[in-house]
Length: 459
Image (tube, rainbow, N blue to C red; front, side, top):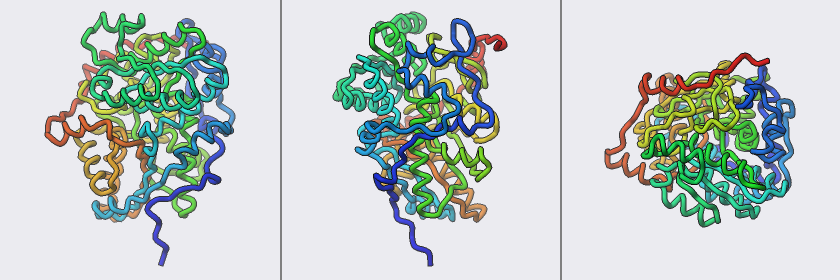
């Protein structure tokens, strides 16, 4: 009789990965290059130096280095909350009466309540090493802003956070946590930047978007001596740092002699999904294994499932480089009733390319179904999941129920990106029946597509 797998599987500190994995090194075809918005030609690393730390700009452009050593200072920071547990969802399996085995990687055991701290620590470390005097960033649901506030407090660097206005108003306590760590938090769009002023002039009542907040944060960074900008998702460098999630997960599964048949992750900009799947996608690219990989996004912001694969600005103010990605248009603003993050208009260029080439699947789910799954999961696994994480839970449950129908005992892995303690307004709306679903019409999406930039053929 086989030995029962423990509920929680931890690596030791000594077993923690000492390197990040760069997925681009094994991709058959590279994502299309980012473009300079002034010339519409491919950018070079030095073109990014006014915006990003130099080391981060180099990581952003690197397509050949398979592994990057994690700096000792970052490893020491990680050891305060990592390794994170891989959990066997025995109680969820029993409640679903499924033959499937379900595992989830839980990234919520830190004050930010999410995986975001993995890249925040790295980006802040490189800023400190370069001698910068301040950083700017944006945040949607608040996890990234909180993670950056934690990291900047630790490395002693001032931080300005532009928080999407509807989240700023809906989540005052998330704002309070950022301020506790010393960050300045500004509701975006704001009158403090030219980009914010222009957006407010066009729509004074807007609830904001990540694209708006990025414009303001970048403007603040490039116009302030000694400052740089940091981003919590989408970018190649962020997926690099988040690969520690997947590397830990794969090592833990190897201890159990397990390998996932299905991998599920929520998808907004791509940081969690890209990090979770990194070493498994490597196996897929190299022909060593072929797991199904499913990206789950909100039906209210359906970037992969209904977006266009095109060059677009990464921000609403159109001051950032252009990236070829699945996009709804840089001016797209998710419905104010959309709970949680996953509200960015575009998807990571790496994940966009992998999706276009057929290496991963994507589904979009309505938020009432997401919160139905979240409450079911909480009752059986005792963790209150973030709304973002609950998108992955929804699809993992659906896949487990399909296994029940077919009798297939598949192994399902999903990413539990964080906790939902700052999302109780949304939980309350679901529980009292006032939560509604919003799905943009084709006409709504066409408005965004019509504004996509015209990009000439590259020289």
